[in-house]
Image (cartoon, rainbow, N blue to C red; front, side):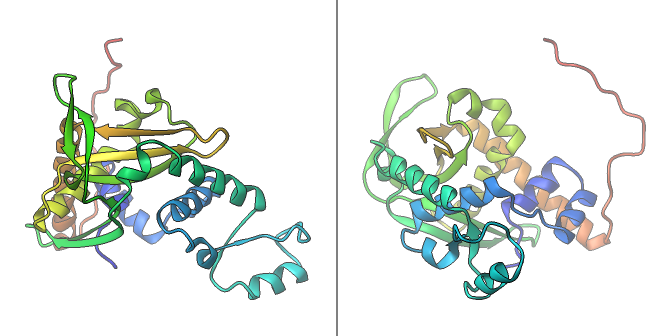
Length: 262
């Protein structure tokens, strides 16, 4: 669907309309880590579907060129090619998620749900939720640092694969750099506009390499609010640029930059 997704909104919110237009003309091609992440994602959320979407490169075909390669590729349809080592790693990562004491519970309910909404600027936006759990409760931290029970029906859940699931890799700076608060804010903005009352965002993070550590984190309400504001701003910018057919880059005036206090 041509509606704006979180990656497009991230470019608009963190860069310029000129960067967005280039992003739409030349989408990022997936690298090996992104492909492995997609495979793990598929195995966790859509078990069995991986056989329809991915194909393991035969051990007898050493290079991705030549007659043998061309003949094999012609027979696998549109499936994405992965190496046996990546397939094995994805199976281990999936098993690690499923054996985690919390992750399978928060990944219950509806999975891979698409949502569409036209916002107040007339901009059509979209979201695809990894999981929207319905039943049960989960213990989360409140603003005072106390653990409280929250219904899972108030949560949306996102599966992320990473080089590290350590808390230091999922703190303020990494989250902002990767725009994950913006994705959460954009998605929950859409969901609540459609009448589904959810205000908590959970990450299920699984490492791509051994021992495939798994951690579950909640994104703070403050971060979600900041991401929602950025998403709304990005949509306003998109509407204005579309109306005027004007896609500016950075300001032309001389600006001021400075190092942080530390």
